[in-house]
Length: 229
Ligand code: APR
Image (cartoon, rainbow, N blue to C red):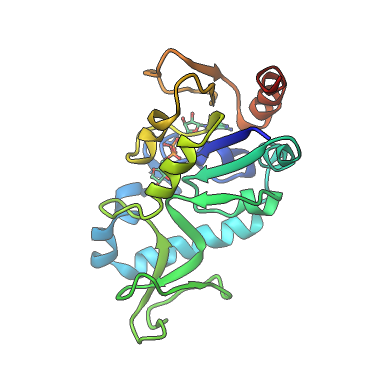
């Protein structure tokens, strides 16, 4: 089976009702992204960040995977599909995808502020000050914030290097190191990009499908039939 690697971003979940980061004049659910998604913000106002991510978690629980997520899960019948997502929601998994790497963390998890290897799956969607890890330190959302390392980057690079086909869906390719992942494909690997507002500076070999994720993945499947033969 050919290996199809997907790199998804916020646009993937837009049709599930989860707002993207850069579509609304840089405001994300009425917040400046930097005020709620940086390590400095956590040090300055941890209550605000816990509240913000509690809201995102509750919104995620009420959201459903969209047609794009569902079609990608179905593609596992015909391709060895590996998803690298910048999204912290669990909509790929809930659609049925079985290989999902979360580059920027997961809303469903918390981790220790002192011992990063202590990661817990949340049962209660509400995190608060005073929730402690097994060693007695405050728990924080398991999210990669601006100013932090991206621990899964090595694994993501390996996946892109192993791709027979790469498809990028719904990301502005503004945030590094994720945006640089497309440069790790082997020579002559077909690269598709699905986005109704595609980034302007793309390498010439990238085949753009200028559609939303739902329609875009359906069109991709048609194109993949040609590539797979
Ligand atoms: N289908 C596909 N793409 C869409 C849709 C849709 N229905 N709606 C919007 N888009 C596209 C936009 O045109 C834009 O190019 O999705 C992209 C979203 O870009 P961003 O909001 O910048 O999101 P993303 O690239 O995922 O952000 C990367 O930045 O804030 C950090 O860590 C956060 O993971 C995030 C990272």
